[in-house]
Length: 111
Length: 114
Image (cartoon, helix red, strand yellow):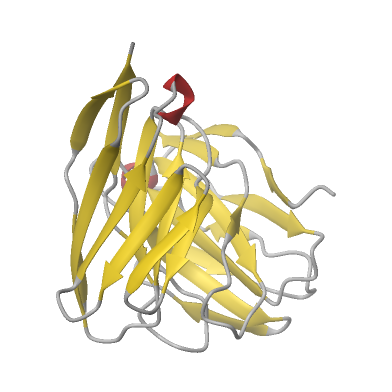
């Protein structure tokens, strides 16, 4: 089976940097995604890691350590519009693109 | 490009009623799926399909039926609605095969069963 742990809520200041951590246990691993979900909206894709290391995409970066079962999402130069839930998501199996979602971290950006 | 179109946006049902949530995508995606999202829980997979004529159960399939007669459409049927099915439902699609394929989500259906 799969299990994902991430903090329930975080607060950060506009312009700052915030790191959202995710630890996981899984019986099979074919990648880890981060999705963003604004309140009342659908999740949207942010990043994908399958190899150890850092993937950078603009203000957002995602890190993966497979041996530690650990990932983080780093958000730089925070903007008010970054207030959202951030979902750590596993792809445990090959074949069908079935994903296993964590409960999400609700980030509030304050002025 | 419309992407994933999901209807209705809101629905209220009485216990025992049946209904169908519609999902259509215009990206020629092989893979389609239905998730439900409840407070304090991650999205949970209900049913999925890897192509026309092929469907399979996810984590929480009981009380739901699906069919995939075309590549574009993947409706979700509630056979006899129960209050436990009150939730937000998302349809999602992607290309199949590569492990890095991202899901594209519909806008969601807020369902309340009284």
